[in-house]
Amino acid sequence: MIGESAQYEDLKELVMGKALGYGIARKVGVFSPDPTLVIKCALNDPEQNWIEWRIWQEISEVKHLSKWFAPCVSISTCGMFLLQKRVEMGKKADYPATVPSFFTDLKYSNYGFLNGQLVCCDYGSFIVTNGLSAKLKKADWWE
Image (cartoon, rainbow, N blue to C red; front, side, top):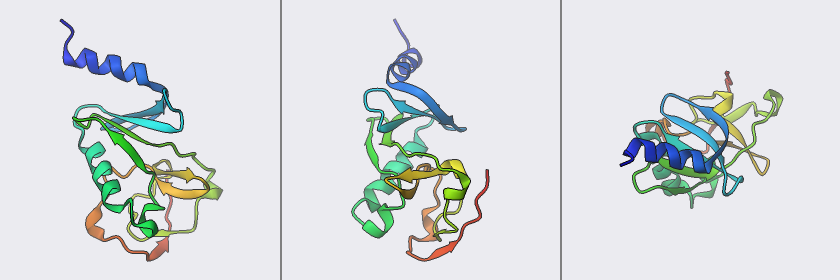
Protein backbone atom coordinates (compact mmCIF):
# COMPACT_ATOMS: atom_id res chain seq x y z
CA MET A 1 0.00 0.00 0.00
CA ILE A 2 1.27 3.47 -0.90
CA GLY A 3 1.49 5.86 2.06
CA GLU A 4 -0.07 9.32 2.18
CA SER A 5 3.31 10.98 1.85
CA ALA A 6 4.02 9.13 -1.39
CA GLN A 7 0.55 9.98 -2.72
CA TYR A 8 1.10 13.65 -1.93
CA GLU A 9 4.46 13.72 -3.70
CA ASP A 10 3.03 11.84 -6.67
CA LEU A 11 0.14 14.31 -7.08
CA LYS A 12 2.47 17.28 -6.63
CA GLU A 13 4.76 16.03 -9.38
CA LEU A 14 1.80 15.45 -11.69
CA VAL A 15 0.42 18.99 -11.49
CA MET A 16 3.47 21.13 -10.67
CA GLY A 17 5.31 22.37 -13.72
CA LYS A 18 8.33 24.65 -13.63
CA ALA A 19 9.38 25.46 -10.07
CA LEU A 20 9.09 29.18 -9.34
CA GLY A 21 10.18 29.35 -5.74
CA TYR A 22 10.09 27.87 -2.31
CA GLY A 23 10.16 28.94 1.30
CA ILE A 24 10.20 27.28 4.67
CA ALA A 25 6.55 26.28 4.40
CA ARG A 26 5.75 25.84 0.69
CA LYS A 27 6.95 25.10 -2.81
CA VAL A 28 5.47 27.11 -5.67
CA GLY A 29 5.35 26.14 -9.30
CA VAL A 30 3.44 26.66 -12.50
CA PHE A 31 0.17 24.70 -12.46
CA SER A 32 0.64 22.35 -15.42
CA PRO A 33 -3.04 22.06 -16.44
CA ASP A 34 -3.35 25.89 -16.57
CA PRO A 35 -0.10 27.90 -16.79
CA THR A 36 -1.94 31.15 -15.93
CA LEU A 37 -2.03 29.77 -12.37
CA VAL A 38 0.52 28.71 -9.79
CA ILE A 39 0.14 25.87 -7.34
CA LYS A 40 1.38 26.37 -3.81
CA CYS A 41 2.18 23.08 -2.14
CA ALA A 42 2.48 23.07 1.64
CA LEU A 43 5.50 21.11 2.80
CA ASN A 44 4.01 20.09 6.15
CA ASP A 45 1.49 22.51 7.61
CA PRO A 46 -1.05 24.15 5.26
CA GLU A 47 -1.48 27.22 7.50
CA GLN A 48 0.00 29.72 5.01
CA ASN A 49 -2.28 28.43 2.25
CA TRP A 50 -5.29 28.81 4.52
CA ILE A 51 -4.26 32.35 5.54
CA GLU A 52 -3.98 33.43 1.90
CA TRP A 53 -7.29 31.78 1.05
CA ARG A 54 -9.12 33.46 3.96
CA ILE A 55 -7.63 36.88 3.25
CA TRP A 56 -8.64 36.62 -0.41
CA GLN A 57 -12.18 35.53 0.54
CA GLU A 58 -12.49 38.57 2.82
CA ILE A 59 -11.17 41.18 0.37
CA SER A 60 -12.06 39.81 -3.07
CA GLU A 61 -15.15 42.01 -3.39
CA VAL A 62 -13.43 45.15 -2.05
CA LYS A 63 -11.91 46.69 -5.17
CA HIS A 64 -9.56 49.20 -3.49
CA LEU A 65 -8.00 46.31 -1.52
CA SER A 66 -8.27 43.32 -3.85
CA LYS A 67 -6.38 45.09 -6.64
CA TRP A 68 -3.23 44.76 -4.51
CA PHE A 69 -3.41 40.96 -4.12
CA ALA A 70 -2.93 38.03 -6.49
CA PRO A 71 -6.32 36.29 -6.55
CA CYS A 72 -6.68 32.84 -5.03
CA VAL A 73 -8.67 30.53 -7.30
CA SER A 74 -9.10 27.30 -5.35
CA ILE A 75 -7.84 25.39 -2.34
CA SER A 76 -7.83 21.66 -1.67
CA THR A 77 -10.01 20.30 1.11
CA CYS A 78 -7.10 19.85 3.49
CA GLY A 79 -5.36 23.06 2.36
CA MET A 80 -2.17 21.40 1.20
CA PHE A 81 -2.66 22.77 -2.35
CA LEU A 82 -3.63 26.34 -3.24
CA LEU A 83 -4.17 27.69 -6.76
CA GLN A 84 -3.47 31.36 -7.35
CA LYS A 85 -3.27 33.62 -10.40
CA ARG A 86 0.26 33.65 -11.75
CA VAL A 87 2.10 36.96 -11.60
CA GLU A 88 5.11 38.13 -13.58
CA MET A 89 8.15 39.35 -11.70
CA GLY A 90 9.38 42.75 -12.75
CA LYS A 91 12.74 44.42 -12.85
CA LYS A 92 13.64 46.33 -9.70
CA ALA A 93 13.02 49.60 -11.58
CA ASP A 94 9.41 48.48 -12.21
CA TYR A 95 8.50 48.36 -8.52
CA PRO A 96 6.72 51.49 -7.25
CA ALA A 97 8.13 54.02 -4.79
CA THR A 98 4.96 53.80 -2.66
CA VAL A 99 2.78 50.89 -1.60
CA PRO A 100 -0.24 50.45 0.68
CA SER A 101 0.73 50.93 4.30
CA PHE A 102 -0.53 47.45 5.23
CA PHE A 103 2.31 45.76 3.32
CA THR A 104 5.14 45.03 5.74
CA ASP A 105 7.42 42.49 4.03
CA LEU A 106 8.56 44.25 0.87
CA LYS A 107 10.77 41.49 -0.47
CA TYR A 108 10.79 41.72 -4.26
CA SER A 109 9.87 38.05 -4.70
CA ASN A 110 6.68 38.49 -2.62
CA TYR A 111 5.28 40.81 -5.31
CA GLY A 112 4.77 40.74 -9.04
CA PHE A 113 2.59 42.19 -11.75
CA LEU A 114 -0.81 41.03 -12.90
CA ASN A 115 -2.19 42.91 -15.92
CA GLY A 116 0.30 45.70 -15.22
CA GLN A 117 -0.78 46.13 -11.58
CA LEU A 118 1.63 45.44 -8.72
CA VAL A 119 0.18 42.69 -6.50
CA CYS A 120 1.31 40.75 -3.48
CA CYS A 121 1.58 37.08 -4.39
CA ASP A 122 2.87 35.80 -1.04
CA TYR A 123 0.61 36.90 1.77
CA GLY A 124 0.49 33.69 3.76
CA SER A 125 2.36 35.36 6.60
CA PHE A 126 0.59 38.68 6.14
CA ILE A 127 -0.16 40.64 9.31
CA VAL A 128 -3.82 41.60 9.04
CA THR A 129 -3.90 43.33 12.42
CA ASN A 130 -2.05 46.29 10.91
CA GLY A 131 -5.35 47.27 9.33
CA LEU A 132 -6.27 47.52 5.68
CA SER A 133 -6.43 51.15 4.62
CA ALA A 134 -5.88 52.92 1.32
CA LYS A 135 -3.05 54.97 2.86
CA LEU A 136 0.28 54.68 1.00
CA LYS A 137 3.79 54.62 2.42
CA LYS A 138 7.30 54.83 1.00
CA ALA A 139 8.41 51.40 -0.19
CA ASP A 140 11.62 49.99 1.24
CA TRP A 141 12.18 47.05 -1.14
CA TRP A 142 14.73 44.34 -0.32
CA GLU A 143 16.03 41.09 -1.78
